[in-house]
Length: 278
Image 1 (cartoon, rainbow, N blue to C red):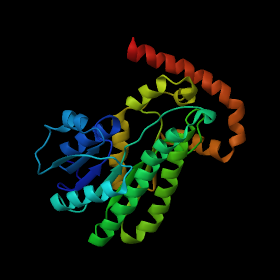
Image 2 (cartoon, rainbow, N blue to C red):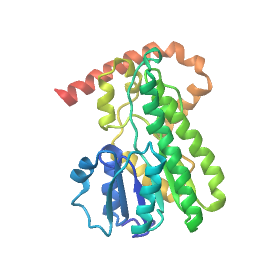
Image 3 (spheres, helix red, strand yellow):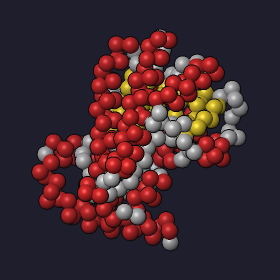
Image 4 (cartoon, rainbow, N blue to C red):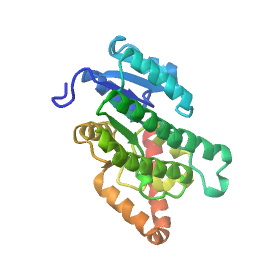
């Protein structure tokens, strides 16, 4: 068990059935936390985590993050079983690449409802419960490097993650007086099923133009470190974050680089396809 994080604390985690969420869920259980694992795919949750702990340490719940009533119902259930959460991690998200002119209302709604509004609902509702109970908790919202610089080919996703980062940074300031930390985590491309989703969309090639996909264990290590230090922002890797922020400050610089970054990304995407699909 971690020497810093106390045994028996309660963490609620969305998107727990795969990728970063599944890695975090397993680590929390290994470190003796009480875990509430949420995912819209309940069968996948059961398959991935069902046998890992008893009901004294693990709750598996189906959760559609788009509905505020579902958040209230879930939090009532958690309080009745474990108490008010000490940590809330908003990790659930989707990505459907596409050019701006092809962005349908349905695609825009899905990104905003799941990636952004789900995080806003959670942050606000969980914070209110923490304040009422006097819990000096921690809310961690997983955004993306695309929250720091707009990425061509994934406009709706990037817009939703910009919103996550903005709301998280405001919440960090407002909730500090109550002893509640809010951290926005901005990882670069991560080796998860979301990476595989993007491989079939050539317009998303810029997302593959970096030095290589990060492992879920690296993101997990960064999040567990953030639980100890409680920063406002956690960017993985940090040097890519500074480049992204510069690109956002001076967007005119992106235009001459766009074509070369797309070409590099296309080559890297083809490499991923060969490695993953044979």
